[in-house]
Length: 160
Image 1 (cartoon, rainbow, N blue to C red):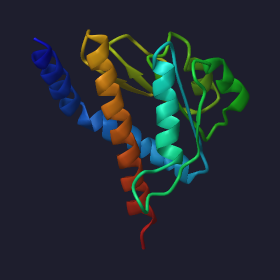
Image 2 (image 1 turned 135 degrees about the horizontal axis):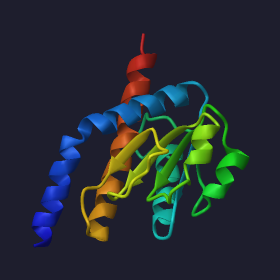
Image 3 (image 1 turned 90 degrees about the vertical axis):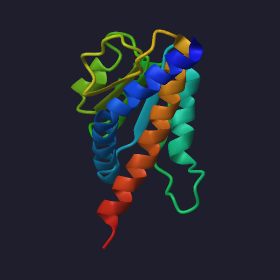
Image 4 (image 1 turned 180 degrees about the vertical axis):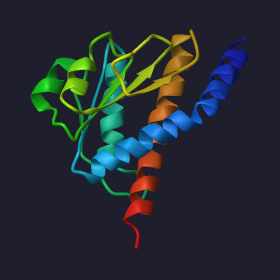
């Protein structure tokens, strides 16, 4: 049973590849313009937000550059305090309204959701699973894909 749930969620992620690529392209543009990533999550997703920040600031692949990122934990209320118009707000399982302030400030907004709506985000990357553990697994995969693709875009656009 769990294998079918995971396979369905993985297939849905593959079908959403274009949305992941579009989010990564937009993120790389913001990084190129001096932007920083500010990640947050509610509940258990707060630890994922910290993981996202670490991935971007401490690349594990030799030759990949560190990018400015901050983990806000479970405090999206810090977005208007720390955020700037060129920044990127990444909400993992954000509540309604969490990204609205960031978007109002001109920040790029990316939401990793599990099917719940997030109309205030420009890029909504939804894990297609009602199983919370499978959804979290998809989110981890997505933010690793975002990290890798952002670097691909930065390298390709910066090369001679």
